[in-house]
Image 1 (spheres, rainbow, N blue to C red):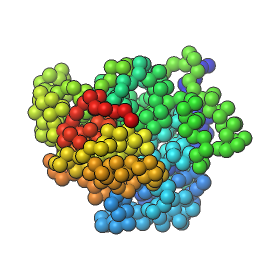
Image 2: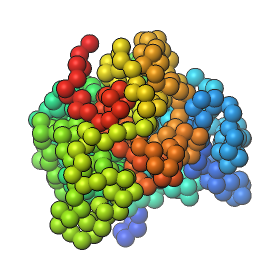
Image 3: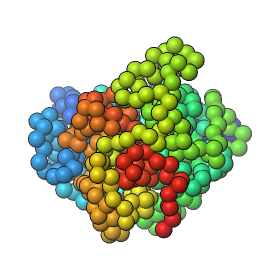
Image 4: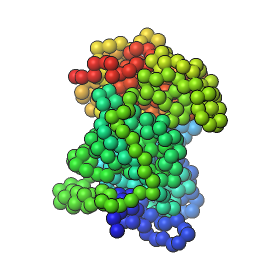
Length: 468
Ligand SMILES: CC(C)[C@H](C(=O)O)[C@@H](O)C(=O)O
Ligand code: SF4
């Protein structure tokens, strides 16, 4: 019977299955960070257990890391989480890219760049944006802390089988329109829960044309559509990205792996439980105006009027969002002034994101009212950007150039907004208080954020000179 990419990976990892019960899945890679692992290790310790496969487990530090000086953690909880992860990794024999380590970075940035993330793998992490790794044709999803403990102890995880959904994206993205706009447009069209209970597979010519970094941006935000995971079938783009990466197979093992990976794409005739479509050619640069990733419009649009929404709950949600965001209905998006710009997070902090933003910024100055920062996703990204001189471009324009971490994506470290401050952010969540209490977040692409930093308000980046 023809099978989907998801079904092939699922079937290959079921260790045990009984009717009416969750299947027991084998896990190929377990990624760990400092926030969701302390109680899991404590549980192991209390039960007198070891980590079943330290060699399939990899840890980093990201959420709590101060990005000005990572070694000066003032917050006692953050400090404790960082120290606890160090201690746990030492005690249980787990590789750790800790503070000051050349591999340190946001967990969803370092997995792929080190070649830990590979097609066909099952990958889990105590973090919702684990969906990022599905860009490689892996089945990757976030788990809770008690599940982290279960995987540490057994390398397996009980899971009910999710449904499948095809998100088919035809056409192609136009100049100045990015993968970030694609996923924001998808969620604005279908809502924050259209994929609940499903694993999305992104298909279509627009997806095939994306680079790996762009595919990661799309899969990253699958969770904001309610999906359990997002996946893209591996192809030559995937293989070219992975070849030669530190933990990717080498020599004969590479050839073998390649042959296996080539069998992963969904078979002709295989069916999904649900399907939605989007035309990439119609997508414009997106800006969110509200407090969910679905509350977004093209940059050419205006802040919507709550009374235009058809359903009462939507009207109420929009009213509340506008109040929190301090916005008036009918305001053109390009007339919204901003105070802060954040280029970073596991959605958009990779080298291509920084290159694209630097192209917009080169030779220009950040608007005097705006405080802007660039936070590379990992030490590797930072070194590469510096080798290419991107840090100089940003600094000369007036951006702060920071150390890798989650930073302003969420308020777990010193990088936060003051109440009422308005930020153009390349991250993935714009919930109330996400970037600090009272902070106002507008989700955009890296080039839209860069252009807004210069202009002091949102601008249609398509009107800018984007070429080398
Ligand atoms: C802290 C962590 C559990 C959380 C997540 O699971 O996603 C964070 O990474 C986020 O983006 O909100
Ligand atoms: S960058 Fe943001 S979304 Fe990604 S793992 Fe960190 S906090 Fe979560």
